[in-house]
Image (cartoon, rainbow, N blue to C red; front, side, top):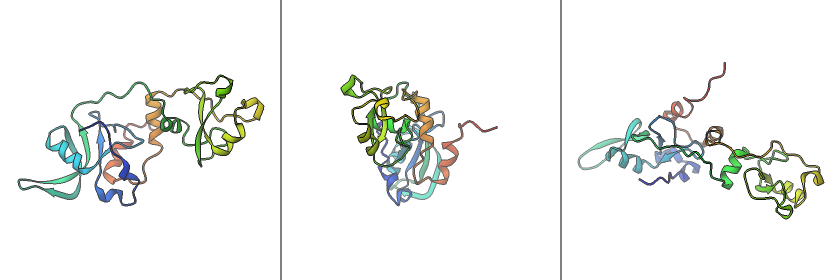
Length: 194
């Protein structure tokens, strides 16, 4: 099994008809929330057959081979703990996730790109502390000028998120299709409101 968790199918209309399996780490937490750690049913069956995972929940549908019949897994837990990353990769996706998929100038969710708060022309660097999500109109309005010159303001100052912060942010953006058997495992470790 490779570490590349294929999640493309969750964006398709009939995603649950393809029977993806939610993949949990050995501590029963999803490997990732956004994108949600899912495997195609074939990979989940293979991992179960190779004794790499325990099956926690199943679909009603079965798969058959000449020697066995197995219900398709809907939730699997890894037998070996996968250490979460301590460092957050500086990627466009993680930047948008940190900024909640909103323009950091006007708050819109449409037509996002990214903007250097201190423009590169003025010596600004491409880093967590200087790049924010921005919609195209705000990006064009700001151009290569400073915030003071444009009269624009940031919704929150840009900073490097920690891995747990980004993981928790991902919980706020579940995929469109969740199987009933997954829900208990997605939020069981969330802090309860008093």
